[in-house]
Amino acid sequence: MMKQPSQLEFGSIVGERYRIVRTLGSGGMSRVFMAEDLKLPGKQWAVKESVAGPQVMKLVRTEAEMLISLSHPRLPRIVDFFEHPRSGAVYLVMDYIEGITLEAYMKGYEGYIPQEQIVPFALQVLDVLDYLHTRQPPVIYRDLKPTNIMLTPEMEFILIDFGIARSYKAELDQDTVKLGTVGFAAPEQYGAGQTDARSDLYSLGALLLYLCTGGKYSEWTAGVEGYIRGELPRQLIPVIRKLLRQHPEERFQSAGEVIGELRHSADFQPAQQGISVNDASMDYAGTRVVAVLGVSAGSGATHTAIAVSHYLARRSRSVALVELHSTAKAFARLQEIVEGTSVGQSSSSRRFEVDGVHYWRQTSRADVISLLGGSYRFIVLDLGSGQDNERLEEFLRADYPLVVGSGAEWRVQDIAGLARSLQRHPQHKWNYCLPLATSEAVRRLRKELDHDKVFALPFHSDPFERDDEVDQVLDELFRGVIPDTRKKRFGFLKRQR
Image (cartoon, rainbow, N blue to C red; front, side):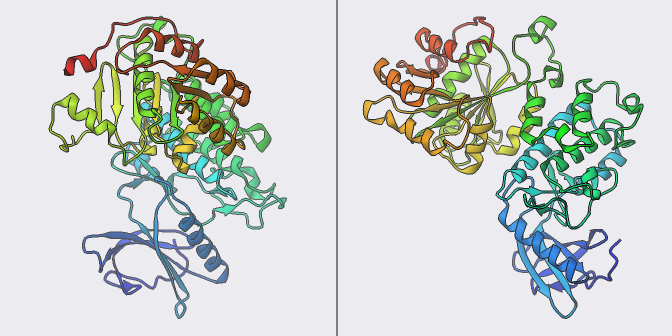
């Protein structure tokens, strides 16, 4: 409970705008209320009130400044911040998240969370941790626990309460203030050293162990394996154990490293009906992500993404093509053709199917994380030509980043320019495609980039239809990744004529 008395009660108006409706929760340093907006009828906000001494006031101001600088779908959006000097109270106004805490959810389901939701949940947590840890300077959350995770009715999660988060300072040997929740906080939070990204990963391990043991354990002790639910993937155990190592250098070193471990392990993929053991034991494992980024508008990113998706569908199965930019119109028009609706009459569903490929139009990054926990063999991201932070991050973390640039002689250098502008990022995984480029242009670009994964794409008017010359190029691009099995020819555009 909050140690200081609250200045608010039902009907109180704070900031001359927000009327208190009810209490949502309280802790040692603050209390959170639901409030209605007097200037925006029907709009509700969460108002966090902190009443304490100067040290806590400093923490709340720091929290406000931090939240203002952050932008992520799994973090609350701060909309107002003000102080009340006479009472010593500080108020933070943020998005009201409909749902319940993970702790309440676990209690309501008697410690049971469906097994198919464990890995998608972990990937959602890792996505926001990766975002925080890659800020400059890195933001360390330091209090990842069930009461600080809000689950929405759609089973999406929002990370709440940044009361003890901090920016990492490389010159410090240890934290000045020791904070965290016993059972979920890393050992270094009790004075053994400074907290960093690996401290949050320890807390993630504690959280996963808590979920996998029905809320019984959050620390690794002798015999805890016997309490891990039998139907869960056994491969989770070594991942959790590595996350919970006492010494930070023995853990996973980044959220991205854990994401890679979860993505590439076949044991984490739910069984699919109708697939034999031999089918499920192909040369590759897990969900692979192909990210297609155009160097400039009109370079052919969407056309190439469609061609790649249907190529993968012919040789594999369970392919999703995701339009990862909210203002794009290409998939909306394609859905109208597929479903036979009139122009401008958008469907309520953002998913539709063409010849075995699941198309997801105008999709958010949060949706991509959810798809990663599903049964898709490949997820192809159509990033368009935009290079905003969100799309660029998805491109850089993809298993197969694919850059598409114009094959025209006078535009080939655009790709080299993009590579130079992003030279601080590792580029060994990158692949380059130049529609209609000459063999000489490809040779020169390979030499300039010192990279052999540069390909010319031949003319291909119908990306839904198989083309032998295009397939030969993509066979080389995905060599060793997929088995060489052939499926029937697709004729989507022919069926529309």
